[in-house]
Length: 411
Image (cartoon, rainbow, N blue to C red; front, side, top):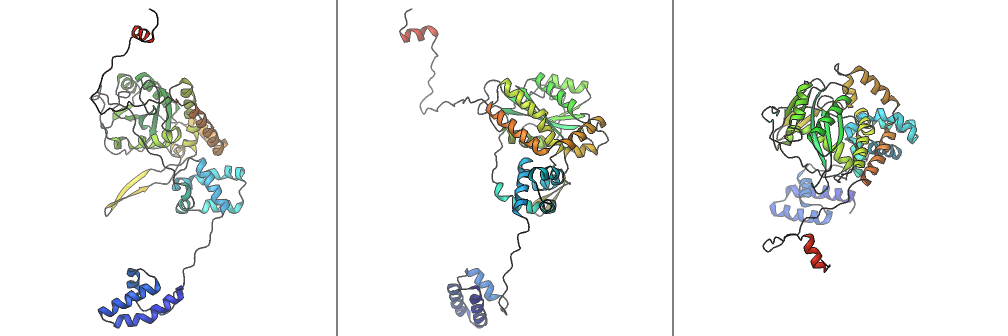
């Protein structure tokens, strides 16, 4: 039955249904559902609603506004930028568009569409590509007890208006086993500007952590005023505590087993480390050099100069839900430029560097380096011992002499 026939049939039985008794309404409803093929609840809404005076017009579908060329260019920019959120992608389009125009030979019409598209439409157009999700795993830091009474806890919300107050954390690259020595990534993020610095370490020794922090402090375009860490022994030690005291750096820590106290750096651990290097094991000097080359050069420039981020401004409770309000997406470098405490020479050097760097070329080089780094991952698999259902039997290992006797070697 066509749509027009169903509507005409409804017009004929609507008055009869309204004047019928309870039993008659039940029969008419059964007949209407069988003839028209409607669900019973939908048929009740039609019969109990206002009388249909005319056949309703079908809602015309909106014509496709964004061309396939625009969607392809948008997808290429999204992939090259590291698959950012639609609001951040919308903010970076004006900066990336001059380079995209040269690389993809975009027409003026496609460029206008890229600048006009809204974040909601970006989500719709890229919906088919947003199905790859990775699961986060916890690290392998152990709590330390030394100097805890000297380092104050910080549990309140960060409310700073100047750069320099940061959160730090270690990310382990141990694969499926924590045996032996392997690489770690020391991550540092500034609360006010969202600037991120990362360094790779051999192990997580106290001296190595302190040296990496000093190197990152020298690379920041603003003075380091404070660090906030977890309770791992790689941070709660005399080396780092003495370094912070001698350089007038505020040193605070979060509560044990409360990752929300370091929410900013936990997010950066995923976006700036895990999302790129995954969960493979790296335990060679070659991997250390390659990962540090990635962190110090191309990756640092792309993430801080070309990729916008948003900051939480406030939270509003609406009934049982919490609605979060964010500020305008900006790159970390744009936030640094707005701070009077920033180093003028460093900002001038970074501005000139940003004007001549091609973000697509940066993204391509980063992908090549990551592919090379993956070839340096350790392929050693540490198998777990099989569980026996019987009582545990302890076997004494053979000595060298016993092994020779068992093999029948002459002694």
